[in-house]
Length: 295
Image (spheres, rainbow, N blue to C red):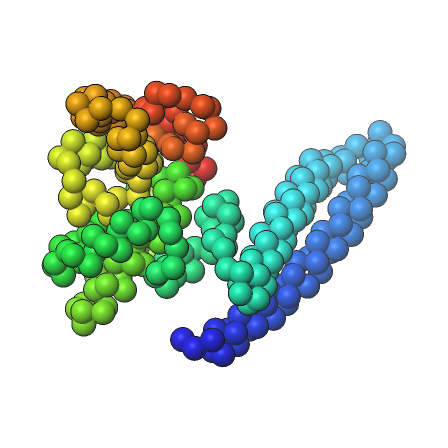
């Protein structure tokens, strides 16, 4: 797509977002008026004479309606914030300052269709995406097709971070397959796993630990839930200049084994958490599956 076409597309996006913003303002105003009216009704019903007590049976119903209106208002406000954030990022991109959306925005259900069909990001320096672009280019077409099916299938242990990464990786895989003129397998219709039971999570964690223990492979770099473990391992490998080769090898072996145990236990190692905690133990700070997943 040329710069002119990209600019036109971004202008169209901004126009659509402005329209949505106005609609949300209208709905928010309507909800406020409804809430005020219902509060007035409840106040009047509270003054009804005891001989007309039967009429007050309406109170619980109206209270329920009022509560729902308040919930809808809060949802509208949250959607407005999301829309405003998207508009701000679109505006920045249109002015030559593109940046990835915050995870909580990119993972919003409002953007589910975009997440599933998004174009491949070929510009980012994110380690997971860079490594996957390289690995995907070296992989066979049949293997890529099989990995795309796995990649685009929502996981029972996905967090918001891994869910967003999952479909960014899948977009690269889809582009690679299409570029070879091959058939792309059917894409998932949702970004969220239906089965998030304890048994499903346990089985998923066992599969991830097994893949990790198998060592370097195309499938390893294709898996978004192992990206954090790979980040930790890459950081440890960069320590080569500060310790002897023998000590580094021993440390990496220990780290690899410890990460496998964490993964199998349901933990998801996070380089970000390790940095924020200032931990030397690279396996200590983790995401617990399910607990940090918001769906």
